Amino acid sequence: MHNTTTNTTTLRAVLIGYGKMGRTLHTLLNKEGHQVVATIHRRNKHQYTPEKLKALQANIAFEFTEGNSALENIQWAWQANLPVVSGTTGWTPPPQLSSTCQQQKTRLLYSPNFSVGILLLRRAIQMIARLLPQSYNARWQIQEWHHKHKKDAPSGTAQWLASTLIQHSQNLTHWQAIPENEPLPKPLPPHTLPILWYRENEIFGIHEVTLLGSEEKLILRHEAHNRTLFAHGALLAALWLLNQPPGFYTFEDVFNNPQTPA
Ligand SMILES: NC(=O)c1ccc[n+]([C@@H]2O[C@H](COP(=O)([O-])OP(=O)(O)OC[C@H]3O[C@@H](n4cnc5c(N)ncnc54)[C@H](OP(=O)(O)O)[C@@H]3O)[C@@H](O)[C@H]2O)c1
Image 1 (tube, rainbow, N blue to C red):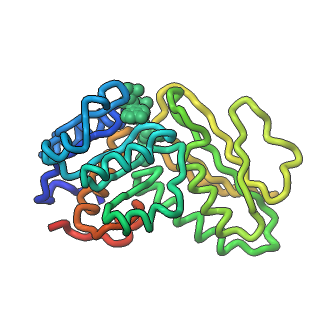
Image 2 (cartoon, protein in one colour):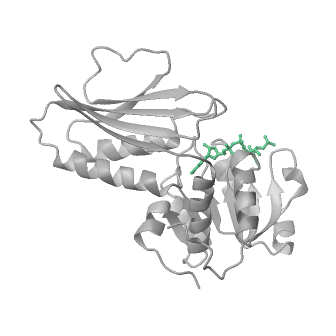
């Protein structure tokens, strides 16, 4: 999935958000022969206009900022006719985004996580949730660990995994975030999926989905070993998006419809 070197498309990328992810993407894009034509953050954004981005002949924008500004940044990049790959967490794309993309003839690919391993984990829990006999006495639990600078909690990925379980389980209706140092409520309210979150050191991202039976325990665990993992996924998504018609896409779409870009 991460072989982007055979691709002939050269990106002229605008990086909206130039923090840990923006910088990691910059390094990867340079390494893979693409160009970064603008690096935009809160403090220099006033120097850029959609017209300026057009003049720079950008052909894609990566958006990795903060949940409260993601949508505004995406719409701003659309004004420069740029397809956008966004990975910002701490917000939920509104359902009407899909029709907005169609009406405005724009493209957006959003994913709270650009790792293939997480996509596989999500599929595995979908399948297990569907296979579980109703009589089986067990409950689900999600745990996530991230670096201490992370601004949102629980992580977008944990919420995404939780929605998947709720959608595919017979007896879950909602999730409840349990911050670190807070005990798990006992008894746990019925139909509740707890998401326990922890902020420690410089952890890139660990997600654990556990099925706790009365006499056994099943743990599915994903660990990101570096940030380049996510940058690789976002780059792959960008190359894929350039060949798509207007619309709203997710990383699952890239995974489901891999193709060699022109
Ligand atoms: N989808 C994935 O696979 C994935 C992977 C890792 C991280 N993420 C998410 O990506 C986002 C960024 O993560 P990070 O670790 O790079 O964060 P970070 O190091 O805090 O960097 C955030 C960047 O966004 C900029 N920013 C904030 N608000 C902005 C605005 N309104 N307009 C323009 N720029 C703005 C900041 O600018 P200033 O420096 O000027 O404040 C900074 O450059 C987070 O939501 C994180 O959870 C997603």
